[in-house]
Image (tube, rainbow, N blue to C red):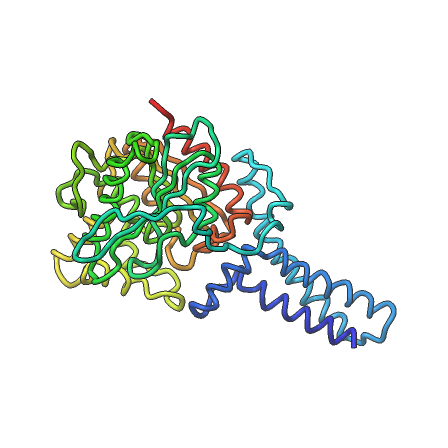
Length: 391
């Protein structure tokens, strides 16, 4: 009986852990791989139980050869389960971050915030569609008060919703920042102009209502994830560019922000179209073609659209300070995106920082308590304090 239990637990642990390092075969398996990477030590616990049972049956029971098979499988799963932790030790040391097992095991969910934690406001009415944002007010009094962060959700430019990572909004508010988590138009596509315009409109609305929320219009940062990170970078880098106008106007205000935080963003759309990540998970070229209205091989005009919609095309010495975060196991957006933009920022002397998290999948920050998130929170807080400080 015990040898059967040991073998079953070993197989469960192994087939859960393997997706931490092996490319996913479908979108749903990729979703599981994110969870497996971020909660890997729970898988390791199952593997450890199987190891203990295997050894027990080898000593006190008639395990036959089953205990050896079970031990090999469970030990392999156990080692893979610890890969995320060991892969970030060097990074944590470099960034002076003390990784916390207590925090790691403190939560398994990323629950939606209750309505008491934020208020919802309309910030635009475009083409008959009301655009809204959720406002999280700071929960402490400190030097960060008066600074704010506009959050832009991901979703391949055609899906997703605001407030999809509420724990991060609450964490920012708990550190003194006012958070504005925004909508933008997802449909109809192509929406490269309208989505960017809506993000810029949110910036203008936030500045126009600065007194209402006790913030400074000169201390605004913008944060995005995936497609939202692309829009955050594009909106920030192309501030006041007439080719990418906002979808609303605000008297005596401009579109400039003080800093940008980008989680695993597509930064060069021509590169991304021609160099796909894992197409078994997502058809990246189709998402880009839908976003801009065609592929770069169709015409020079569409290729020009891709260039216009690429943050890398807008980097200059006036580009705001930028924090780039990317994972080594990202299966939706290739790591080269961070590397290409990093080179552009360096070439133009733009203050910036990159965080490369070796084990991390696209969407790793869904677990705010995970190893990658623990490091990112510390670095991001320092980055925001430096670049949204009062002046």
